[in-house]
Length: 286
Image 1 (spheres, rainbow, N blue to C red):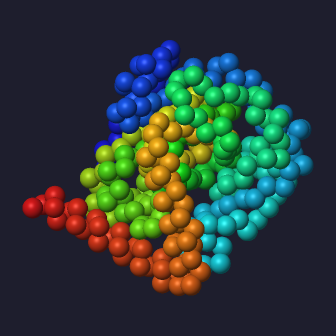
Image 2 (image 1 turned 180 degrees about the horizontal axis):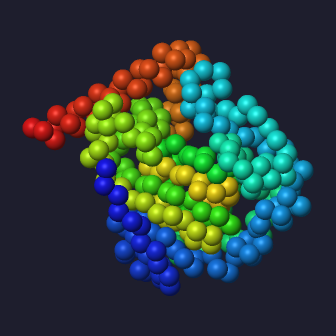
């Protein structure tokens, strides 16, 4: 596995960003994109606890992708104040996502705005993500195929990115946007193709924004408990069409067959991922 450090830039203009990063689909970390956001200085653990600690939020653990009854669903809830205290003070694998806090606290959206770095922003769907120290986001790409601008608050995250063409080496499971790979502890005996994967890495600090190009695979580690905000944008109708296909495939095919077949469906997907990786390895050695 070969990893390139993602560039960190200041003062990027829309023209330079489009030419050097958006068009070639290359990630970059903005160090000053959100300096004028009130959220950058206002959103702290204490402030969120004081104003929104009463919210009941869904939490997900490392079993999120395990086949069966709780596949891709939450099975634990907690008051936001209690959860924030937990992740601020001790390690936990519990994460909060797939929960739109802005539906319950719409005034939070006044604390940020869409940057002028590009057009095509999705102004309806933006999400906050929370996680405890030591928790991880499994390797995947976002089902909506948008370009993602991920801004970190208060603490640090480690992020690994892989371009879409690396999918066979990542053991992508069919009918999903999920990979089998544990980036931190790769088993090259079981997953030999992964040793040839090429990607990127960075540590995202408070106030920095990572540009994740559409359909880039990403794995995220919470170095400390913290939270981030993801904004989404499209620069073509083709990406929106791909998103609709992904959503239909996921909700109709993948979740449907998981309900019907359970572990058998999970095993079949893993077998297919292995076959695709083996084809890559045979082609490489030919």
